[in-house]
Structure formats: C-alpha cells, structure tokens
Image (cartoon, rainbow, N blue to C red; front, side):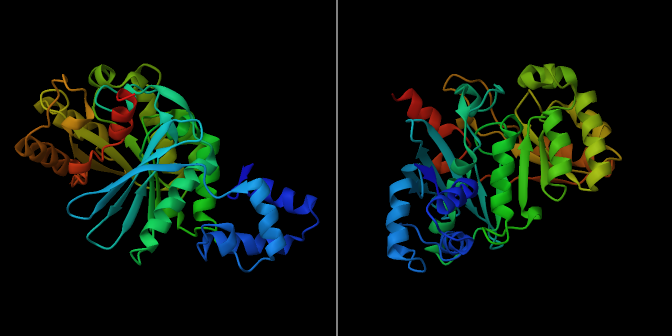
Length: 348
C-alpha cells in the first residue's frame, strides 16, 4: 500500500494498469481541490478505478489520537499516531487577523537535545516520510474547511529538525506549493532550524522565496553551547557566515527566534551582545516567553519578566533591529511542540 500523495508511485500504478495521464489529474483535483477524503467521494473517476485504488492506496496513515482546542478557540492541537505506533504533533493557529497557520512536525522526536525543549527530551525515533508531513497539512485543511476557513501558512516549527530530514521536507514543500495541489505561496512557508549550515545552503538554492527562521536563543558561543548542543558543530561564526550568504543570495529577511528564560538567556549583557550580533543584518527577532510546560517537572527554568524583554527590545531598537514579542497561544492545551507526545510516551 502507498500514499495517494505520492505522485510518482500513483502515476506508475495508473500506467501499469492501463490508465492514461488524465486520470492522475482527476485524482489530484479530487484530493486537493474537491477535498475528497475517501475513495467513494471521488465521483469524477470511474467506480472500477476507485475500487482498484482501494486495493493499493490510502488517504492517510496517521490516526488522530486526540485533538483539543484552546478555550479562546484560536489553537487546535492534534496528537497523531503513526502506522508504527509513534506519536507526533501538529498545531493549527487561528490568528485574529484571519490568517490560519499550521505548525507541522518533520521527525518523530528530535536529536538536537536543546535543554529547554520538550521534544528534545524524546530523542530521535525516526524521520517522517514526506507523505506523513503532507497528511498533517491535509488533516488541517479538512478541519478548517468545516469552519469555512482555509489554510494560509505552514511553519516547519513542530517536532524535529527539518534540515536533518531535508529531502522529505523538500518534497512536502513542493506539494504544499504546487499549483494543482495545495497551492500555497512559497512566501507563506517558513522553515525553522537550530542552525544546520548545509540545510541553510540547500534551501537558498531550492526555495529562495521560503522564509527561514533560526532558533538562536543566545547571542554568544558560550551561552548558546550551554543550552543547544548544535553549537558544538556549527558555532556562531560559521552559522552567521552561512546566513550572510543566504541573505546575499535570496535578499530575504531572516527571523531569529530567541527564547526568554529567567537568569539564563535574559542576562542584561546579552541584550547588547544580541544587538551587536544582528546590527546591520537583514533580521527580525521574535522574543518567545519561555513556557514552563516545556521542561520536566523538576526543571528550574522560568519565563523572564516583561520588563527584561522590553530592555532587550530597546537594545535592538537602538541598533536598528526590529523585534516582536510573540503572543503565546494554546498554553492551556500544552501547545508547545512535543508536550503531548512526551506525556503520551511517559504514560506508556
């Protein structure tokens, strides 16, 4: 059995069984435009072909283990179970502006082991296939369609490091942006990385219009090394060199994610260090108040104060670097990536 979202396999299957190319176009339209979610709903193709597809293909391999929506209705989090009994998450965020964003996972767990991240505590189980990434998108598309809403943005900020599963992430982006498929603008796709330099170089070549977000979280090698093991492989000087090359090639602003943890990443001297690091660069910083639910129950980490975040913003403003304090969404439903999967795993 193979996924209907695997165009290569589906076209080969149709050809093998004597069907012409236009049959794939009909199936493609039924899936992505008509939003058919079972074979019997694909009424634009003959019944005998639908029966044939049932013997070889599936719409989804992911099972919705649970879905929960925040009290304000803005955030819906899905806990999904894979065919091999693993757990991953995706989150719909309904912004007040009317924009609907999906945060997708690209791995089961994550190998990066950042000290502040729930997913890092899971370790890496395996990469997700590109069809499993697309299935997350389609689950969101169907869910939003029931609300008469459309998916507008996709962010690869869920479980896993996208650039350590690059080929599958690449194929999923191609489907997300395909005109005859989900038809999202490349500018509405954001890929977040801890700083895997080869991946930064590849995405600049393959998707120059896709937005890049960097999980920076500290402005010096020493500070970053204390919370992010990736720093040992790709130190700041090498990372910033790759990012400068990325900007020169794409002319796109880079989004820097900076988590605010009391006494750890919010030291006063780090404000100036961050401003100095990004001064003169095409950058926008997103300050993320730390979510205590990310850590283990005995973690001493706590969110920083609003006053200290404002001091960081002031330092960046003086250096001409724009920034935003990210509005937290879904705290009441454990919406930070990895929280539900970690609880599910620990509960076994």
